[in-house]
Every structure is written in structure tokens, then in C-alpha cells.
Length: 124
Picture: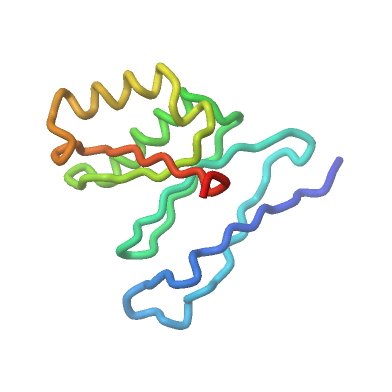
């Protein structure tokens, strides 16, 4: 039986946790279930508090993306959320566009509860 490996995810270098300055730059170790198969992780960072939400999925696909967004919206029900993504296909397909249209429900863009921001660092 293969040994269990872990993935590493670092907090952003300037993340801030009120009352806990010694925890800046800490490393979070995430167990990986099956090292022989791919594992997709979706994550969200609360830029104000430094709290990270991370969820594993079997694959990165539109259904996982919309499920993760639903979870983030559940955790922050009254907040307006901005999601920054690369241009991966599961971040911009038909299912996701339909989900965003339903969530934002014909509101003007400045009132959307969920805004998608495409960011492709290789295009800079």
C-alpha cells in the first residue's frame, strides 16, 4: 500500500490574523487521499481575515466549481464576493455562466452578490 502523501498550501505572505501575528507565513499541510490519481482542490481566501476555505474534489470541472461557489456563498450569505480565476475551461463554461446568471438575477453589476474576475498571469 502506498504511503500517504500530503500537499502543501502556504498562506499569502502578508496574511493577517487579528491577535496572532506569530502565525504569519505558516504552512498548511493538506492530506492527499490517493497519490496515484489527480486531486483537485478549490480554495477561497478571505482577504480581510486571512481565513482560507479549501475543499477537495475528484476533478476540476464546472459542476465542482459551482458547488464550491455555493459553499462559499453559504459561508458568507450577506457578503458581496469577488472570485479571481485563471481562464481554465471549468471557470468559464456554460454551466458556470448559467449559475452566475441565476445568482446575480438581473441585478446591475455593482450589486452582484458574486463577481467573476478573470486573471491570467501569463497574459501580463
